[in-house]
Structure formats: structure tokens, C-alpha cells
Image 1 (cartoon, rainbow, N blue to C red):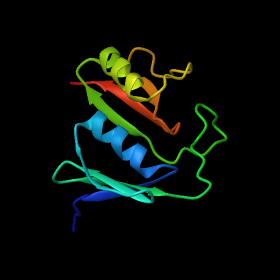
Image 2: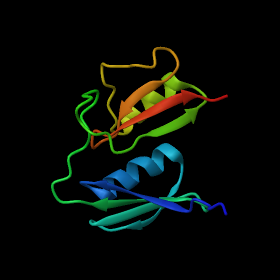
Image 3: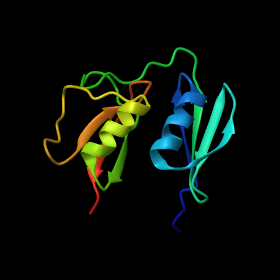
Image 4: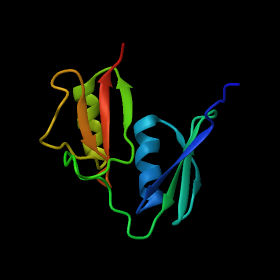
Length: 119
């Protein structure tokens, strides 16, 4: 039997800020917003952000720091998307292991995510 992914939840410091950031990046709606828990969705899949006291994001690119998750996002223009997302609050770390294949950004809490060329 196979399952359908309907939602996943991510730990963070500031659920409302994380939800607002990823809603803008993905073009999804914020469906729930409270200081301790916020959620975004596209009508079929939701992402929840739950506040965890003392949460510390992974340190990029420190291999001894446990990376909890990262998104790979397909975009038509990686450079333009990177500039847009930095303007929304992301940052661009110096270490870029993908060369010309993908770009790593850090979300406002410091969690890495990758921008990959569409197609």
C-alpha cells in the first residue's frame, strides 16, 4: 500500500516568520498563524512550522552539525530567484557545493535550501 504525503512539520524558532517566508517563496497561502505554530499549503500539501524552545538550526556547511532537512526548489532562473529570496530575508552562504548546478541559500533562521534550474 502506498501513502500520499499531505503534510510535514518542521521545528523552528519563529513559526510565523518561517511560514511567511516560505509562503512567499513557494507562492502558497498561510493557512494558520500563531506564535507557537503556523502552516502554509497549496491545496494538497501543507507544511507546518512548530516552535521549539532553544531551537538551533544546522550550521552550514559544518559537517559535524546535524542537518535536519532542506528543500530543493525548482525555479526557472536560479540567479533571479536567489536575488529575490535574499531580498525576502534569506542569505547566500559563501560555500556553494553545487557549482553551476544549484545554489544554496539559508532561510531566515539559517536552515539551508537549494535552488535548482527547472527542467
